[in-house]
Length: 354
Image (cartoon, rainbow, N blue to C red; front, top):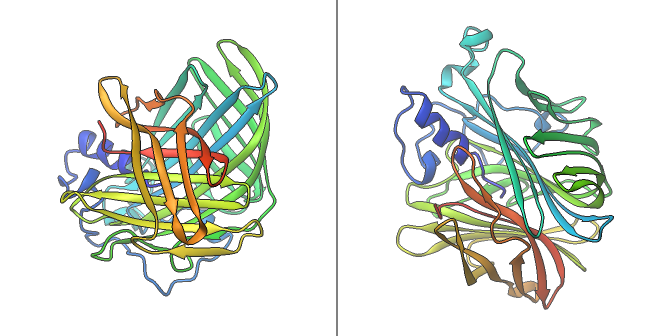
């Protein structure tokens, strides 16, 4: 679901005193307070909706990739740009000018191997050119990290940290995918929602630079786009999000953990030609199978994932259980392998385990 703006919001709460302390997990249950809210009858429009939506409080551009190296080792890659607005005055001319701009940006980049996890973070203020997104031609950037291309179908992505770097080319061979009701994705029984679409059909290739040397890699990538102003209810404590690329299709599924011990779930089945079937609460199931000690935290790194309507009953296992994102607000994110009724690979994100 890739949902990830939680991290920006926590950073905002820690660094900007005027932001009100929140409700629900990482402020995502805080009332919209004058920001725009998703509406079920809105039809996504492109290329405009590839760009930023400053009328909404939170937004992200979230790329993950499963890669195989020339050394036959499996790797994972992440490139993420988050945006948040500190107040609804973000739309005024004064608020958008220079250092008065009330938009904050955060970037995360990571590379995962079976034995190591490399991660780095960038923070930026809006209004001064340090970070931003434009829709056409598409460009998303923070400092010298870039996700750019003539359109959303053909992109290059670059990032670097103290001990790693990458330079990749992406080409999509399938359509955009809309989750929920044509991109209107409900996140709780109370009706909180976001706009959520993906491009899960990228082929990716390029170069990783790691402490062990330079490796040529190729594989497949998944890019999530999501924005809202209050996507969660105040009783949701974290989530477990899965993107699976299988031999006969793709599956996005998430479960939102609630304070009473129950879950709210949603899923999208994606046929090879891009045709989708959306599944509402209860159809998608995910249960931990094995727990790993990750820096003193109990984190589930093997799962049983089921979508009975499609005959999916698989075990997903982290390539590296220690794929902890040690950023301003930490979480777990890394590549997984899939075995069982279907085989494949994908990505797993988990929040609320710190």
